[in-house]
View 1 (tube, rainbow over the protein chains, first blue to last red):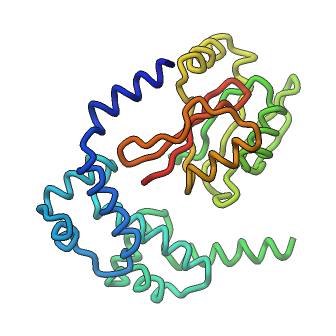
View 2 (view 1 turned 60 degrees about the horizontal axis):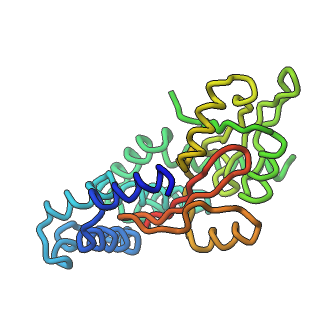
View 3 (view 1 turned 60 degrees about the vertical axis):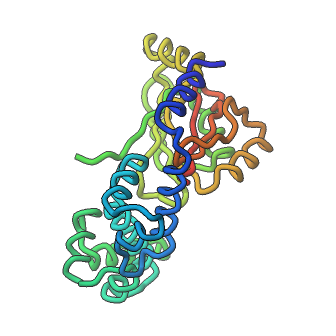
Length: 134
Length: 131
């Protein structure tokens, strides 16, 4: 057995032995993946798993390294980039990925990607035009 | 400051280029000649071409401590770095058919499933699927 495999076994036993907890957070992540465009509230998630909102938040962060809220935002931004590339308008994109206001969408998008949704979209369009021209 | 580059030490740049493009599926982004036949050679993911670049760096041939470190990692089975995949079982099957050798078969640990293979250029590389 290599040193790496020994280390993995050790970490598995010390950090990842609670299967019930792990399944709960994995299911939570899948739930977010499949429902990110809806008005997701952690209360709903915690009800499904018969646990408290704060406990679920802590568990998620413990195993995935970020909170469910942060994960949800990343997911929505990733999806909105796809939509903008595919030609959906900024307003349509905002509501299609589950944000409730254009202001918060634009602000978060800029923080996460370094540019506003409309600038991002213009760049994508000019990149694809350039590809055609050259 | 921006994170744009991940460097991987390789013993033979041309061999590494073949492995990383033909088997792993990356594509060339930059290929510029440097002195002594060395190249500034970077690759990107086909589905994320404006994402971080992978630099295939011939450091072990020019700087002994790099070679020593790389050999030690290889012997201990430690991956030099890791890449994300959508489906680890599919990727394992695809690479195995291309004669890529795995030291760790797809294994579940916590919220990830991962595997480790030999890149034939001196490194173990880990691939990971988030569960």
